[in-house]
Length: 452
Ligand code: SF4
Ligand code: SF4
Image (tube, rainbow, N blue to C red; front, side, top):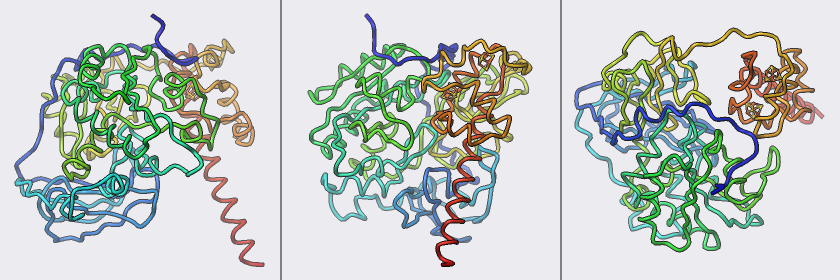
């Protein structure tokens, strides 16, 4: 049977067998230690700290927020005392303003979101409650979910798609969540369908997750929801590819959004979080993380409190088999190689992948041989080699003209390139420079207008 898919893409080694059959284990340290909460690391405005050094906090207490619509508040996962409010290093290697909480090991709970609301939420409260709970996409970019659920009135929503493709190699957190908590994921989607009564719900899963497909199918009793197996191909879980595979609709290029073709895409963990916020009054304060790779003694899926040091997760998995040459936050295709493992787990941490020299071997970059393989696999139908040349010439106008801002940084081109060109670094540079130039031009235009 030909399962739905998209054009382009690649088939990297899956690496899932290390943890796909490992039930989620809970790691909840009860000794006194630091938990670190960055005020940014989501799309939109960073939060301002709501606490100061010396303040007592409870588990599930809000510690950061802002009035900006595009943002999401931050919560402490532990009870204890605020030790500092200061910049700390995060997984990107950058320094971010953080609230540092010294835990007391007791996890004394704060009042639930329901208590603050004063009653059980109704569908009219859902989107507000989702914002209040700090729910963002859990796949890495951390786009605030309440923003997705507030499309313009002239964009009717027909499909709510739960992105359970989990196409990134090595990761199994969504897979395990569907196997172990199918009813909560389904209920989270049902809550969203109450907000969009005209929409159908789709749980889209790559066909290599047979147990998850069977579990979700047997637990689903809602005729408005269907479970849809998809072909196994990377990057099946990228938003635009997923929408194409599920609906056959193409999301127009930047700045168009899924709502322009009547779709909203949510992560599997996001659906679970929506259930937790609406049913239990819980904010985002923990998540499942796959800790894996050939440099990890015992790869596992762990449920951990946010803010915990990544080194503690690796320790829980028996430490390193040998000194890894690369430790990645996320998976091998779209993850970020970390300078240090002494950084906190955040809402977007889906995995920690530690690789030995043998498996992380990187060939040296050589000249482009114009083979065109990168063009064949690009799911956004770009010309990766031309984009790369434009950036290396510092011709950012050309990069923009070639559609470089539409690159989703999936890495399919780099994966297939026989010359091992560092293509994704090139596009990241191109996109960052174009964005900075646009901001500078807008600020100059504003200053000029104000001077008149
Ligand atoms: S795949 Fe690599 S070598 Fe081939 S055209 Fe693209 S950049 Fe050049
Ligand atoms: S150019 Fe961008 S979107 Fe296309 S394959 Fe490369 S990384 Fe992916």
